Image 1 (spheres, rainbow, N blue to C red):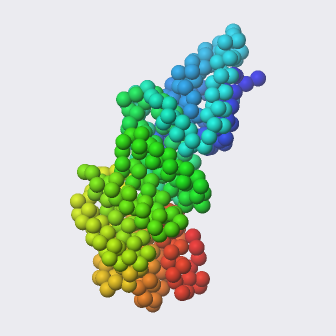
Image 2: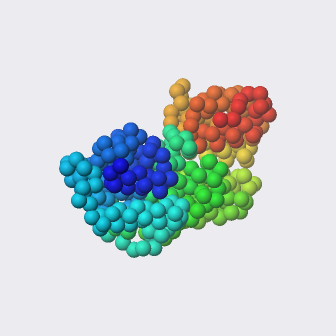
Length: 407
């Protein structure tokens, strides 16, 4: 007969709807390390090993149950293991505690999706030590950096697991409540971005809404700008896109948000160009470039790390291509020179935007040539940016069906 604590760990995992491998990923998402394995989860559930106190904390966060109660059960299990008989001396109170603890996990998993649990935690007021809070906040930032190199499918479970970890910590956040709320919002926004990439649009909208709720709770407008700018990619009408981006631009006017402002204004320029507002597009692009002169994308917010000089080239190419502006040629030359012979991070996206801009601008031969280069470079790339740019150039290339296949 399995030990009651091993059985509890098994039920917590099953109630969370995870395989052993997914449970290991969820624990790694909390710890920020890649040390937990499916095999170790199996050892815990077969009572071959008992998690350390640090791992107990990570399991509690990953499964959204109180650390103190889970640690008490682990301590009792260690005592039983030392005695060599799993059920010796166990009283009914211990059985009741485990039943309640397992029930708490069932309630959490059944109550709502991750965005719903976060909304519930935000409404429950707060009281986590500084190292734990910092680890959760740093991990949220790290996920935005990983997004540049991982596929949406690989990223989704990790992001949602970390969102659950922060959500579990929020009711006891204490002095760290505001910082954790912002980190939760940033993680929810990324979860929405990933969901949108996977075609789960209703899910993405729910994540963006709770991101805005986090922004309001924390009094942090740049977080709302993040949600609005992500939302602008999937908004149903040009008017809605421009309204989202106008509001986002007003949310990133404060000090320390130059990179975010450049991104938002660049997106506004793109959408204005798509709507045929040439003057508005050129004005927004000029403001974006001015903001970027003061930007430091590596040391501002983690969610703007992708706004490199190459990405700014992409935005300009997109605008000039849509408007068929004469500046397109010089901008394309600058972008190619900046890329050099070996594509840096983000370079695949620039190639895609360059191909799209040339095709829109009427230079079909050069556009097809760059499209072929882009298709070859983008095919092995797992990122959303590369796939999206690939689809754009596919739609605009007159030889798309012959020259490349969708990623």
